[in-house]
Image (cartoon, rainbow, N blue to C red; front, side, top):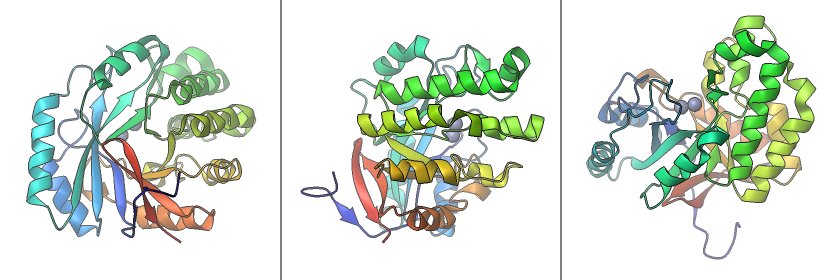
Length: 275
Ligand SMILES: [Zn+2]
Ligand SMILES: [Zn+2]
């Protein structure tokens, strides 16, 4: 994977998880986010606005894809030479609409497709899932869905593997994912098998749980299992978070033995050396 025609570049500060006002939960325009990215010292960003198939999600049917593409292309031209701007989506996954995700992606020109689990059994992982199942069962069902996503092979990278811990921590003050190490290992193995990357999402560092998503132990395990494809994402929904803790994430990846950060162009991996 890391040889032959593969492109190697030396631009460490990349952020491949950024939202704009094309997502209903984001505050700032594409242009404002580009400006903030430049201010944060980023060399390359990828917009990953929400595509959701869960009818109860506020993002359902929200993304006007052609307008989005035009706006990102316009920004790419405007910032050429200063900031590389890519177009992607963050597409939510539940097994029952896997076919719709596939249909949405087929034939669409994108640089990058990030996969997320935000809903389980049509319950939001931010709260409803705990009301229905309680903490342990909620985590188990959440991870089952992440495993299905990892096995689907539909995505370029898995976003915030342990997203549920942010909300578990806020509600219960604890995160019982240690009890699910077998499930997490199975997810990592599925990613490696399918050639899907793993995101280090820095959003957890600005929330009470105060950890990257996934945490250090999971990243270490991924490396030990032979995982090499790491993408970085601030998950910024407003200008002040563009590039948030990306230098920290690069240092973390390096300290765990990763030699490259992966970026995507036309859904093909390229590698940014961090050795
Ligand atoms: Zn997400
Ligand atoms: Zn996101």
